[in-house]
Length: 181
Image (tube, rainbow, N blue to C red; front, side):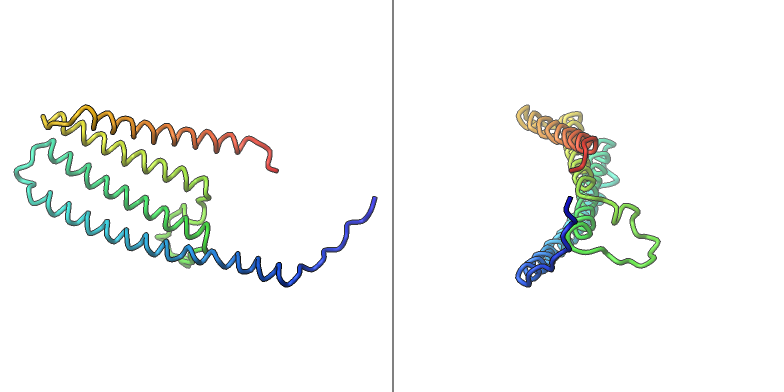
């Protein structure tokens, strides 16, 4: 049995290439800054929607009030989705976010791996889809006209998201049960 050979130093070209590849992760940072801008735009839409809806507050039916709340929840979930992608994407692929000992740091930051991110995204998307479907059902209950085709699409899309989430969870579960290579 031969002894393991001592580790040989890497050639300069290989070290430079690997360093360049590693530092290229910073090319993702502008994407996350762009998502922060999208979050600010979503806030403007949220405030506009809330202002518009609340101006009719005293003449709303209970069903209209529920639809208003569902619209605002929908926008809130989209904002949460953006934050999850911004924080966990940046921390997983670019750099750890140093918040010091800030007590407001979300507990999941720094702990969500790509698999966890995928599941959080699917859960958020399924919730947003469920709210869109619930809004359509509420509009039907109010007597508003919704075509069968639109309703079928909403149900089909929602079922697709739910099924995709279940299948992704199943794949992650199966992966966790296999030996690591």
